[in-house]
Image (cartoon, rainbow, N blue to C red; front, side):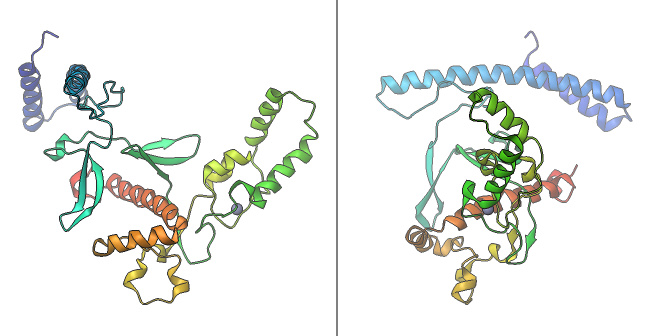
Length: 303
Ligand SMILES: [Zn+2]
């Protein structure tokens, strides 16, 4: 705590100069890197404490002014030392020409003001995920395949799908009656049984991992059964003169100039499948983009 911010800055400048000028050895570089990261953690801890206190004071000020702006006084450990607000902090139209279509945002002055978010992987579900404004978007990378290919659409039967019933019946037959067992014992056995791969589970359509868990089917089966997409599901139907039938699996919202009327159509016709597909495609596209970055195809983040 005796080190000032000026000292940290001087140390960073000195290390940077050494890296530029000298041909440094790997162990010296890693020593300098650890020293920098230690300094960063120290500054972040101080900034977090300041943000925590600032949030609490803001709430007191708002209370005394009778302005209930819903400020969260308890930043979590993953709040990145940022003064934290509950959403919506602010509403913004998606564009100046579409004032009525708004999103909840947190405004910042410049790009570096945005805290870094991790790309998450949920082990229990075998899915990648992000959380934006409290909305969790989950999914995996899938194949882009022909119409009618395996798992290019959600199974409408959910956990009642015959494929799950077959798997469960198969388990009951191998296990015998469990009526006389305690709930704890059968739960234990079910868990053991769930961990064992089953060969008789098969459905032509896509099931999210939650279906496997709720139906008591082995989640391992989901590893080979990620969602796939038809190539046409990225095409917006409004821009084509296609026949009604083929339009069904395309997008019916997405172009800025028709957002308002498209939204109205979505309300009227309830495109459940399309909305679910959007989430799946969003994560598929995000993961493909992150793969491009990881492999050095995005200039700004070349490794
Ligand atoms: Zn099914």
